[in-house]
Length: 105
Image (cartoon, rainbow, N blue to C red):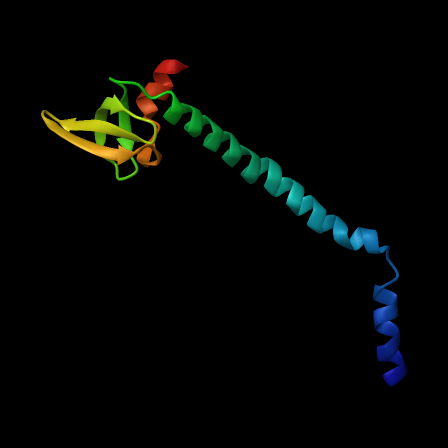
C-alpha cells in the first residue's frame, strides 16, 4: 500500500511544469484585458476631464450633488449647487457628468 501511495505523486508530476502554470497565465491575461486595461482607460479619461473643467460646466460630485462650476483653481473648484449656494471642493470630488459625455459623442 505504501509503495502505491509513493507512486501517485510521480504520476501526477509527469506533465510539463510549464503546462501547470498555463491556467494562471491565462487568468492574468484575461484579467488584464477585461478589468485592468478598461479601468486604466476610464481613469485617464476622468483625469483629462478634471483638467479641462471650466466655468459653466455641469458636474456631479462623488456625493451625488449636481451643480455648475463657477470657479476653477489648480486643485479645487467652486461649484454652485443652488442659487447663491456655492461649495468649494477638491477636483478629485468631481466625477464626469454622463449627460455631457452623451452630448460629446
